[in-house]
Length: 507
Image (cartoon, rainbow, N blue to C red; front, side, top):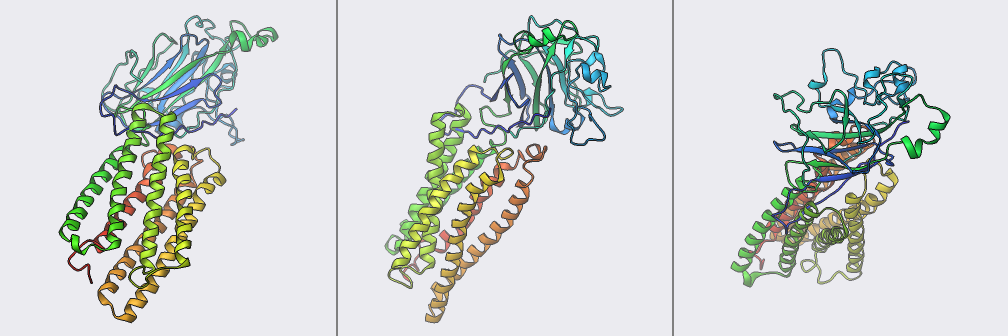
């Protein structure tokens, strides 16, 4: 039976707490889980590790393996060469021994299909048969008894940290060799199982319960399965990255990104304020609007940085959910305000026309719609699991925003062309050059958005592939919102330069 794992996404951080205890990205595991595997990207360092901890009430035995995704191909053996849809055999049970997939000495372990000349020391695997105290019986040295054949569970990745408990002694070896030694016999669990991470990558922890019988299974022992012999456990998988915090590794780059954007916008605001002070008597109404937008952008960057640092320090909860909505509202408000101001400027307000009449109401309705869809999209990209969410649900979040965005862009470009034509006819060359440069900036934005739309579409079409999360965890944040934030900065910076306060404002 194949079990697929749902991707666990936690997006986090907090600007207000710069000093905190060591925390990490932590995921709970239960014996009732449909998914049998937890995966997460990890930025490695000298003190990075994965800890697997179980509660004292846990009982029974488990097959456990920890590895980096590049070695996934060696996990399990092909069950049938004829039926390609039949999942691999992943755990060595009595039936697996009889089928020739493993030896009786490997009962209760994950099956590793390593090629000739490659040993487990040359891979990232740590594999063991784990027994909780009081569950050491049933050695399973014969194929007729010792193990009842539980469905193994298919360790397909999900997509994807609590202070470190006492570490289990693991011998660190020379570079290029696995520093995590797999126990040769039964590992009786007494303290957290620790796996050292010395290479940045996408790491997985797979746990499958195995049912051990003292004698060959009978109808009576099978009746007692759920209460007497079936394993039960509750634990956590703890990922300690090179950074301290509860943020998943795939999202941590956002902390530094928004810090950099905050510093950049602060420098822009300082420059804008200095120019406004120098030419205060020449300030135009549109420049007051731009001043407000510059201040709004700084507030938004502070909010984004504060949100991710807060979630990194405290994890998900009611407060972080409220914080998320605040950030989403600010982000959507910035976009709507920016497009609205750009649209009324392109329509020639206060330059070609004294007022826009009914057109102003249409622009306001479009702005409000774009704001609402922007909030839904911002919340959706944080809460949705891209590997498990249907394409229809994803489109419900993306298409409305794409529609209002396209409406804004098309309307702005059409209005800008009309305004340029009127200025050319009136031979107002200075204003004409400004609006022509604005047109070049917008055409550049449309061009870049078109390219990234194609790239993003091609990227997300493979989101259901087994290796999608492993290949994309480092850059997913950039594809979702990093590049859009950077593109907005360049577009806004160019427009702010054209409409900067100067001695020529009166022209």
